[in-house]
Image 1: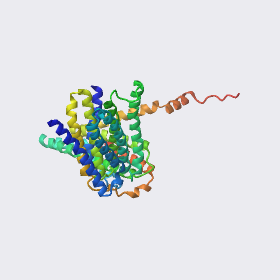
Image 2: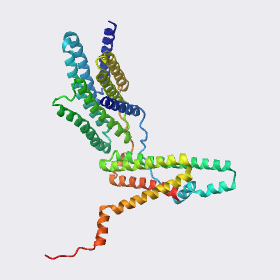
Image 3: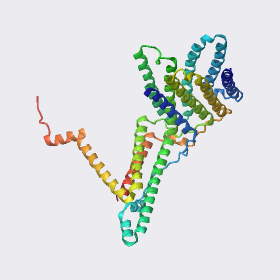
Image 4: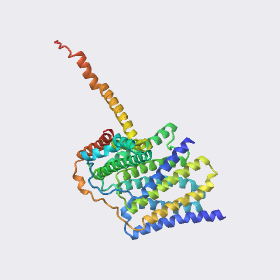
Amino acid sequence: MMSSVMSSVLGAIGPVLETLILVRAWRGNFLKEFKFFYTYLFCVLLRDASLLVVYHVFPTWYAYVYWYSQFLVLLIGCGLIWEIYRIALAHYSGAARIARSVLLFLFIITMSRIIAYTTNNARWLPGQTTLETEREFRVVQSVVLVGLIALLAYYAIPIGRNLKGIIVGYGFFLTTSLVQLTLRDYIGGSFQVSWQYIQPVTYIIVLLIWCYALWSFEPSPRCASESAIELDYEVLASATKRQLKSAGAYIAKVIRS
Amino acid sequence: MNAHLYYLVIGALLFLCLVFITRRFTNDSGEDARLDHDALSTELCSRIFSAEDSNFVSSASRISVARTFRRERKLLAIHWLQGERASVSQLFQSYVSLSRQNPEVTFASEVRLGIYLLTFRMATGILFVFLSSVGPLRAARLVSLLLAFSNKLQKMGEALSPGQVTRIHAEIVGPEPHTDR
């Protein structure tokens, strides 16, 4: 009885927070700034509401509706990562060009793993269960997000509070999903009871991160070195390479003389 | 279990990235940084690694003074190396802040420069370990040996490169006789 109440409470907090984030963006007129993110959140809200209805009216359908709607949300999540890339690198054409190559490479590498698995098993789904399939797609998203964060760090791209919040929230969601799905697969049915609580609690943490980061709109900061755009890249790269070489040679000369 | 570990490692990697991203990204100056080393600074810095001062202190003072001298020289050498590393980092950050906005940036050049920087960091990292463990004098000797060895390897590599082999072969054999058909 107690656990059922607890489950219901945890299940209700999610949609409330999702609605709050959407309402804040609507009132603040910044829904259009993060179109994919808010579409994603709206879809999750719709899914949560429909799952609640299915759970009470058609309980036998719940598992099917849950897993199939989960894939829909998963696909929209891919769009969310694309939006992070688009917004963060909007004013950095050089970094965006490199990011396209790196992210495409990572996407192909991780997707080819899934495709190879699928063709070898003669099944359209890569995993033996829907849980494994979801985990494989979460891996693709995680690897691409790791690559994107690494590029943002390498090029020291300044990102605003909103975008940082979206990255941290979604990244935390992916991390916890990967760990939970792996534990569920490894431990088996006995983990199911704990999972019923862990999953909503971690999702509430994600929503709280988004609530804090997206309470109001804050544009991404831009760096000052706009004049650099006209600089010839080849000249810049070769000058840097020359200076790096000379730094090494200088150290060797100092030590040997 | 190995497959499960693979998923957990990816999760942990993403988590580390998130921890990193919550810290502010530094460097947004975009200022032009240059490495300028004049002859005077080269000569002054090279004294840190020369045996001349050390020999003089060892011969003209007590053991404790010589020990203090060696300790201070080691600190000075480490400080100098850290300064050089910081200058190179600044140079690279300056490059990155210019290249990120440049639409002509190429993947191959970026990778090449990244490898250069990585090599420099690794080499200076090894030097840092040498300096910390054996001091500047012995480190200089070790570095000289390593550089001489690497030069020798480079020359051997050059001698074995296909172009060089063809040239040597051409020199030995001489030009092919011209045949008219």
